[in-house]
Amino acid sequence: MKRIFSGIQPSGGVTLGNYLGAIRNWARLQHEGFHCIYCMVDLHAVTVWQEPALLADQTRQVTAALVASGIDPKVSVVFHQSAVPAHAQLAWIFNCVVRLGWMNRMAQFKEKAGKDREKASLGLYAYPALQAADVLLYHATHVPVGEDQKQHVELMRDIGNKFNHDFGVDFFPPPEAMIFGGATRVMSLRDATKKMSKSDPSDMSRINMTDDADAIALKIRKAKTDPEPLPGPDVVGPDGGVKPDVEAARPEAFNLVRIFATLADRPVADVLGEFEGQGFGRFKPALADLAIDKLGAINAEMRRLLDDPAEIDRVLADGAEKARGIADPILAETYRIVGFLKA
Ligand code: AMP
Ligand code: TRP
Image (tube, rainbow, N blue to C red; front, side, top):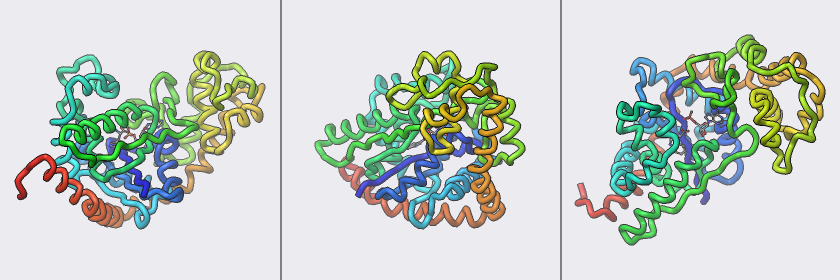
């Protein structure tokens, strides 16, 4: 049985980037022969400061976004990480397997820690070892993630292989990253050198899954672009993406085109064929209509779910029980392999 594990941090609201790069694909995979496990990774979220008064609601909000986007908690396992202690327990073992030299290469740590590395938490540094534990704890075979997470999936393969090698077992299968086409990197609406993120200080930089139609229209209208008309489909290369030199000259413009194509489930070349020669005065209203149409139903369902937090809590409690049913025996076997005396 092919098994999927993926995680999302409840460190704020859910953005269009999370939806197009992750959640939408997660919902589809349920119908493609995978057993799916989706986790709100709150242990990961607290590697940087989270306001205690907000964290629980953020976890509910992300859960509501998953369910509203079609992830069915009866079919898939939907839970929050802190409810299954085995994640932290296996992570400790992996902290002892992974080498400092491997951790030092992790790009996300460098990016998140910024210039003042001495002030970053030890948890932020150990983050990828916990992520490896998330996936290997379920013997998951596939990990659907955005492009930015490729390096962490490579590391979990290395950690699993080293564990198997050190202890002379064949216990943890190497998981594979699944990176989707389309908008695998949705960029900020204000600065296309940065990815759209729930932690960006400017709310105008992102579309939140809770934004109403007016907010979506406003943010798209104000999105940074240029006065040039859109080019035709000839700027698309053989891989279906815009040729890198063309893209580099107008990153904000092509970010919007890619968002349009991904939302519409159409190739970029097809969208450029339709809008060739037109300026953003024409393209932006069309994009706003499309986004409002596609996100409207999800938005309404999210609001309905969030009106009943007890129902969301029940979904998470059920999910955690199912997760523990898979994780606990794998942790117990890991402890046996390591040589711990039975508790
Ligand atoms: P995070 O919000 O960092 O926990 O990410 C959750 C998932 O959403 C991961 O699979 C990310 O790769 C994906 N993701 C986050 N931001 C973006 C973005 N701007 N574009 C595409 N995918 C994203
Ligand atoms: N690090 C991932 C991100 O920032 C979130 C995550 C945590 C994750 N654990 C995971 C993703 C396990 C895939 C599998 O997006």
